[in-house]
Image (cartoon, rainbow, N blue to C red; front, side, top):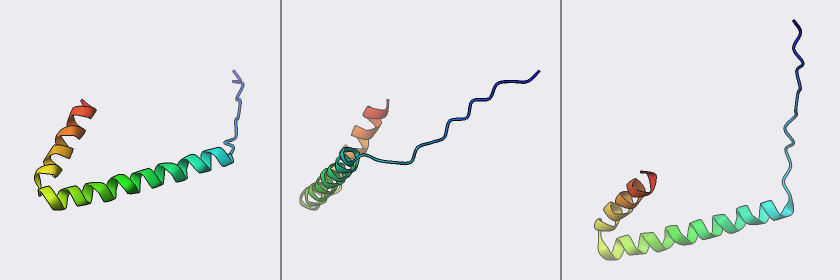
Length: 60
């Protein structure tokens, strides 16, 4: 009993739009990280707890 095996190769390429979106996402992520560090500095460790509660709420 021979099975027909279809092999598909993964194409490793990215379009310029995909690369641009990765760059924009990285820039936004860095901006959010920098804003959150200044917020943590101003308000203290309570912001870290608020972030953790938010993560738990989003996951569940």
